[in-house]
Image (cartoon, rainbow, N blue to C red; front, side):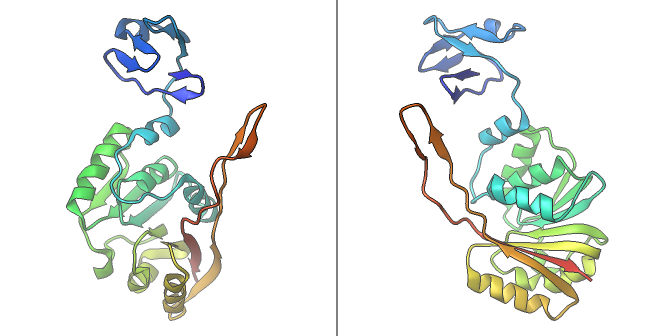
Length: 232
């Protein structure tokens, strides 16, 4: 539901908001508007994936949408792709990948994160993700993968395993917060036949646009460096 550019997520029961209570019986009707007991109106729209993912529970730091978009664009993954990611965290990246590819394998060593991710994926109705309680530093079970995405502190420990598991021409991607980590990662990939595509830092700044004020909503913030390589 939306009122004054603020969203409210509803699944069942009465909805309590600062603008009043909306009865479940009213929300179950096929309508585009409902009124709270205060008389204030709300627009009713279907909850899409982008709405639902805002509601998932998060414990570890999650990759932001701007970076996920780059990963999905530059790796050319599609409905026939099989990809692997590590670590799973809250399952946010897993969910985005799963909506576009055939199968996602996700490695995670923290059992609490695995349980969190499974609950989130169930909430999002995602079924084509297989989460493994496995340390990717020790190896990769799968082969002929179309992409491997690493959100790990030491991705250089995975390079040899990734080279063996990827298809020819497939992408290896790292998500790292600091340049020294990027340098270490790229240095290790030079021991194998990887083609260095690029390292990107994507900066996003949201703006407030209103009649009497138009200004940045937040300052420019660094999230991470994305490094893309291809197996030759």
